[in-house]
Image 1 (cartoon, rainbow, N blue to C red):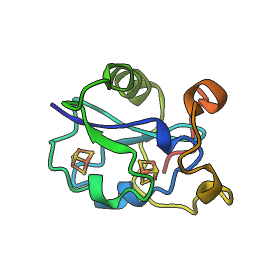
Image 2: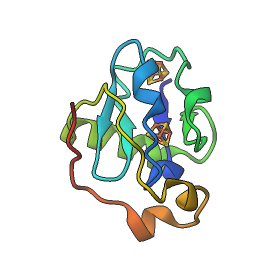
Image 3: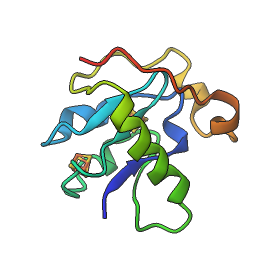
Image 4: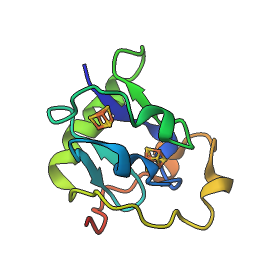
Length: 112
Ligand code: SF4
Ligand code: SF4
């Protein structure tokens, strides 16, 4: 198994998760992060740190699409280990529906 980042991270991107990961396996897109499934050691430390409740174990049902997205974009986006400020509207975007369809960006973020 692995932990993965799911839809509610899009445009929330609080980045509390990157500071606690012991193996630095978060990767940064333009408006969300993903976890590299082959690097994650399943420690679970990041899951309760996410204010948007966006980090889930891939053993939860219905997350196949997000496992695929984490796998694909962890190869394309730069590694991120340092927390920066969240977007100004992160709180307003928390819980918005259909974020993937409306806001997902395949563009890479800045990385470290
Ligand atoms: S803490 Fe949660 S919302 Fe913030 S970047 Fe990490 S996964 Fe995304
Ligand atoms: S479960 Fe552990 S190893 Fe995996 S991304 Fe979270 S903190 Fe990193």
